[in-house]
Length: 387
Image (tube, rainbow, N blue to C red):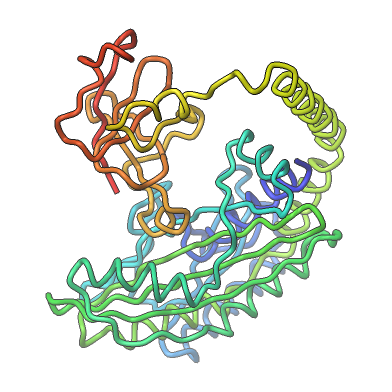
């Protein structure tokens, strides 16, 4: 429990830093609104030097939307532009149909202790055993791109990107957790004259309780004639992003305060979870395991191969990443009339959801729970398979 809470705080900080690479706002004047004229002069001089001596690049300054501080600066070609709208789908654009799409992120938790995994799932975490990043690229990202008509060209590790994240990690509060980063870039040739580069970043945060790992993917596309130049410029920008030390110090203070404030609360929650777990085990033993879950009840119906309870607090957006769902063998189902989207285990082609938050999955296109006397006491709605 403590591990999952810790990483929720830590991951929020990582996401904030990631936005300095793919963010949606800029400030090309100074690091902080209260910076003095000396700092302003120094930053202006650095900007001019970069534009004059670094192949036409300039710094893009990224602000923290919460407090207005500049988080970092990233050197990218001066011909590129940044969309300042929050959560822009395409934060960066440039010549020759260049687009840098918003980064997609997802995180997973895994522990050797089944009880810890169960607790993490109750907290809304996605539980999945870690996979090597190379396997994710080979068996998940590559087939996904090929299914869209792209031809795989090559993939390579990105030590410069890893170096940046290691530098960022060194500036964070040092705990008993070990943080590790991996980065791989893969290239794909499109049928429409547009090539795609995908930067995949994998992070691990591990301690004695378990490991939380995440996958972030960013797509860069451009005309074939400009693609190689754009890809190199993007990798250079990510690898040479410079953090604002004032912002990182401020965020580290927030992180430390959150640790202290939440530690006692989550210790109490973990104790309650353990007590509840022991009580459930005692009841099962005393009554001969007579209680049945929704899955075991519906397993009696031959047309249904998947059943369970929806996690109502884990609603997915329509743009949820296909890549991260296939890693955990999940499917996103949706109701277009209500806009609801949920993650459920993959394996069937048709899903139904009732008003109690229960779902069933079947490969029988003719099966309809609304006319099944065994379970039609609830209101059932068919959900579409989105991914």
